[in-house]
Structures are given as structure tokens and as C-alpha cells.
Image (cartoon, helix red, strand yellow):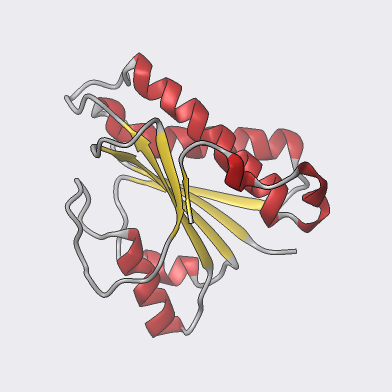
Length: 170
């Protein structure tokens, strides 16, 4: 069975910026209640660091989740390609594509990697995310859950394909 890491990041003290962390908490609860032990490891942090390349080298599949200021619909789930560009125009210092690039170059590991962007709307110092962002979180969580059940866990193949869901990019 594939080893899966779900990694949510963002600052829960800045409203919608914490959507990735909230999604990680939902995935952890769902996995605990519905999947065999040790099916998915869940981790969170304020932002990605170059040290995360070592962590992801121990997994076959990695799913990053983060809040997005881009004008996407509710969420976007895409397969990630490595990039030597260290910083993207986000609120975070290191991009997930760069961490994947480091993982491949430093540890010679190529985990299948996805990025879940959850659209946010407010970024002030406040621990309460907006209602609209929480709806986006729920939709993104459902997409990741379907991805895991349908495409990542071999014993669950009878659930169909996740590609029909809203917001998926190849």
C-alpha cells in the first residue's frame, strides 16, 4: 500500500490563511474514523520549509493544502510538477513545487504530489475564517477524500474517478 502524507499549511491566526491547516485536521479525523491505521500521515505548519523535502521523501504520495488569494472557484486540486523556482507569489516563503524539486534532487525520490488550493477572502489577524472560505474548505475536503478513496487506495477502486469533480486540473 502506498504511504500517503497530507500536509496542510498556513496561519490559523489570520482568518482564511489557516484553511490548509483546517483541512489537515478534517482529513486526520476522517482517516481516523474511516481508514485502517497508518493509511495517511497528517502534518501541519505555518509555511513550507526546505526541510520538508526530506519529510516528503519518505512517502509515495504527498498532498499539500493551502489557502489561495487567487480568483479560483471554491478550490483547485492539481498534480504538482517540480520547479527550481524557490518562491512563488503567495504568502509563503517556499513553494510546494520547489520542495518537490528539492526532494527529487537531494533524495532521488519522486512522490506523486498534489496541491489543493482553497480560496480564501480575508487575511486579518483573527482566528475565525469566513463563512464562504469554510464552504470552500468543505468542497475541497470532499475532493481530496474522493481522490484518496478512488485513486490512491487500491482497495477502493470501485468508487469511480475523481476527475469529474469540480475544480480538478490535470
